[in-house]
Image (spheres, rainbow, N blue to C red):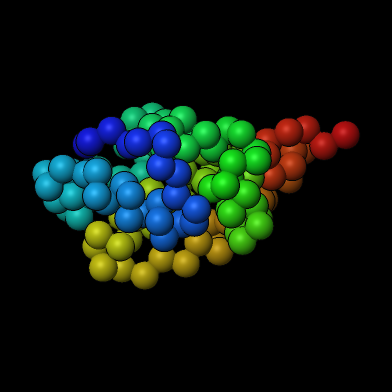
Length: 122
């Protein structure tokens, strides 16, 4: 994969997907399409690259704000996961509607007594 330019940050999910797909090598695209690579297997590689390059740990960056405003998601791991799963669905020409996944994330944070950022609720 080509490096992501940290000076060019997508402003929404669609731009994030496009930016990643453009950076993928043809062999990586095939690996995602075949299932050899999936969201879990790239969490610590591509996921970390997304989180760090696009400053998803910071709550006031443009992409973090878009996810909070449009999908009510705030934790960087949740955001990168939605981006990766959406990108894989697109590569496979499959539909992906993140609402069920978002509900799972919300329930997880509720169960551990945290807000959507993973911060404890007092």
